[in-house]
Image (cartoon, rainbow, N blue to C red):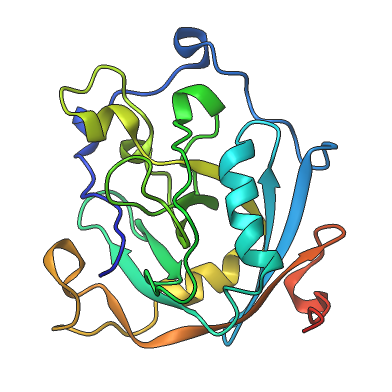
Length: 225
């Protein structure tokens, strides 16, 4: 079963998360001492991420367990969620372990955006989940701003209150993200909200490794196996 990102609300229904109201500190800028850089080498190119360990320590540590254990190697980006509203391109791409019992680790505690201050902007990486606190090894990268995935304390349902756990952003390779988003999708694969969103074929994740600093995708070093 695939972990998911819930259907998004129409823009008029979205309540913006404000640092002044939540008390969350804004994320540190690129190059902060707590930043951890990771390169995702795919069959479509390399995506380099800046993970914010200062503001999302639990989620970042969980992701790095998969990176350091090479649990993402040989997985795939398998979903491109295209939203019908807004200015295209509008949506996200999703990849990771696909709940493979041989790869997944213990679920990580949920870190909501109104606590971390890391919002779902274009290029943000965020954990996929079922209920809050069930995220393991599936993640998504935003192709466009998605405020509907941020925690909304005014929401009437627990899922909307919690939102999804964002923990970093792309610093190189958004052209690769956009390329994956535009790849062919199956009209029949996927269940529920995912039907019609599954990439066919999926985009292979060759390896995911820590790197010392963000570098242009065209010159990113091939991670050591």
